[in-house]
Amino acid sequence: MKNLVVLIVCLSVFSIFSVSAFGQSLYVNPNDDNLKNIENSKYLASSINVLRNSNGELVSVVKTEASKFLPHPITDQFLDTLPIVKEGIISERNIQMRQISVDYDYQNCISEMYDVPGYTEQCNWYHRAYVTSLGITNDVGERFEIFRGLNHSYTVKPGDSVTSFWTIITND
Image (cartoon, rainbow, N blue to C red):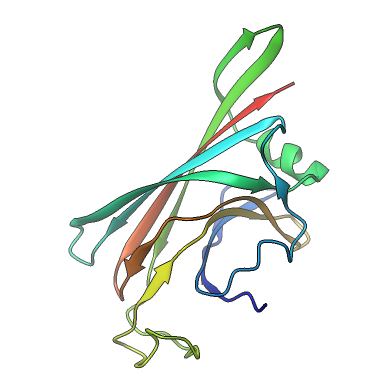
């Protein structure tokens, strides 16, 4: 099945990594990637996604629980660049919480038309976001999707903006 990426954000946040939020729509094959089920892993990750229209008015707030993660050293390398917000010990395990936010402002007119419902005009389009992902790009330009949450939906129109507030908890 074909994956369709409809939103990509890259913000330079660190000297080693840049952060991205990926929104995928309509054609998502959760078995066609390197991500693993997050259940029983050392991670808990969630995102609060705040959608605002072009006037800055609140349109929706959607919470996404990550269901997949990337089992690769790059995941921990990136998390180690984030400050620890809270830390403690539970059942003799060290628990750490980190947070990061990612902003995206949708352009008024798209440059590429997609062969999917909602993309009928370059300046009057919309799409439905079904996936929230946290992606990173390392210093040599390699892209990694490190967390993904499924099963939420909101409609995005030209001029809208989305801020994803990620909270990631790890235990050793």
